[in-house]
Image (cartoon, rainbow, N blue to C red; front, side, top):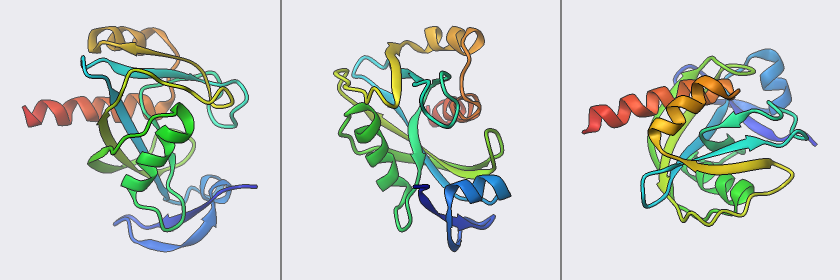
Length: 166
């Protein structure tokens, strides 16, 4: 069964409930939450999506995340998704939101950050491979590996946000 999401407007106000498939097909804005997961040494968790997933099979991702369910905040979705996909229990911190026009359809993207244990237990139905990369290693990987469109856009904004904070 297709998941239900909240269709939102350009100010991120809820307009109604629709299926995610319909939101993608019609190009309607909805909410997606992602988390950049770092370990205590600052390395970033990267993973390759399973070949069985419906969206972007086999591509790499910098963030862990997915659509926010009906009635779910960005923060709640950002905590739920790493638990479901990677077995990670964390309280991600929302850094910023923006309308992301890369990917399958436009959506509001809430970008979070969390420091997590490096012991990850991924769901094999969702994740084919995972590893921890330093920022320079990840910079090289982004040029050489096939990443999801969200990964490029969200990670470049994430780096700019971190740079502006320091």
